[in-house]
Image 1 (spheres, each protein chain N blue to C red):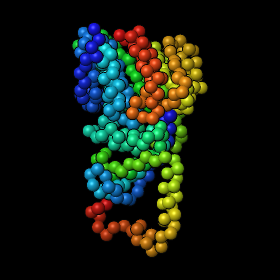
Image 2 (spheres, one colour):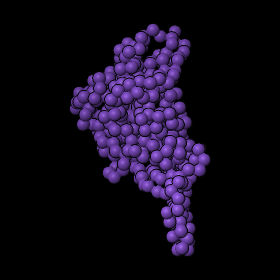
Image 3 (cartoon, rainbow over the protein chains, first blue to last red):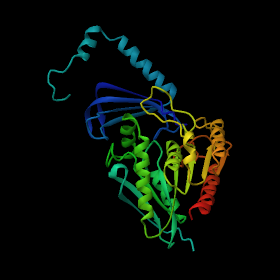
Length: 99
Length: 247
């Protein structure tokens, strides 16, 4: 089936793409046919820079259990981080050259 | 004599609004005159597997042309990267799809070996788009391989939208071949029955085949959904249908 179910969001991130480390500003999450993962359907995540070339992209294709565990692991990790470090991560960079 | 000889190459055609878009053309070289097929790629994009399908048509005596529906979003990009950009930007608008298929038809009809007849075929999202193109363009035949959201709209709230095509079947100018998996839910066998009823009521010729043990994308040789028996039977139906409609 083609679910067409897609969520998009803006974000601030860096990712290692085929063109090296790049700033990334957009994510798409969907459940559909994977390109490489050996299953009919997978939870897909594309994180990319919408202002750069299409190959500036980090892609993940996950089975459902892995996707849930990854999401829960991210949340658990963030909940255990001291508040001052959270604040530091959220701060805008001093120079704008990388963003 | 059928030798399966062919030539295949990437070309530029005029698509919607006269835009130059990339396309893949496969031509039989062992016939003097032939029918043509516009091949509409699936949502994962203008990829190698779809180009292999075009070459199969050419090897069997049909000119085949795949317009790259994602060319505008990501010219020159790898198929998977282009598909990611297209998905993020909301997919292919129906109006643009129709313009690109019309451009592909014009190109195919201009070929010296063309007999003037053109069919369309599409897989997955392309199945819906193939049927839609047949409703709005003078195609001589239409093949829908498990196109979802033909009789219902896609879910609300998703940036990717597809609206039902079933209300437009009165515009079809050629017969329809539908190839579906019994285990598919998008489209489900019940949805295919709704389409069949609409085609009957509109007085349109159609031939539907639903394969037991097959789900969505059973033609896709590079995916675990591939069902060789159903795909082989399906290809036989396709060539039988094309032989009767555009050869």
